[in-house]
Length: 115
Image (cartoon, rainbow, N blue to C red):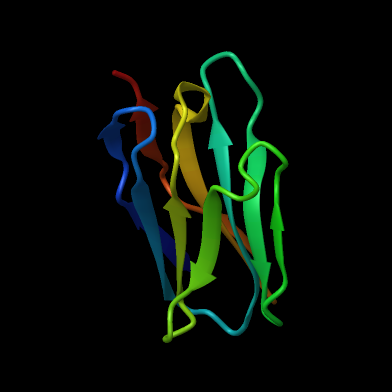
């Protein structure tokens, strides 16, 4: 079983920054893809950013240039640095990890951007 624990969410003013963290534990054979999704009230869950094992990144257009996804040195953690936050970034953010045996979700962390 694989567990993902997220942290780093909170309340921030427009223009501020937050850094989300996700640490994976359990029986992990090989992580092939790590990513962050978000879901705002009344909306579908959407991909925010992803990072392949080889280091390739992908961002949704609305966050490109403001958010950066990165992987920890231990390879079992993934981060999302969020700068220049906007009210429309308000959502529950979920960590997602793909391994050779399946894909897994974290419990989510709330990010609220408001003055």
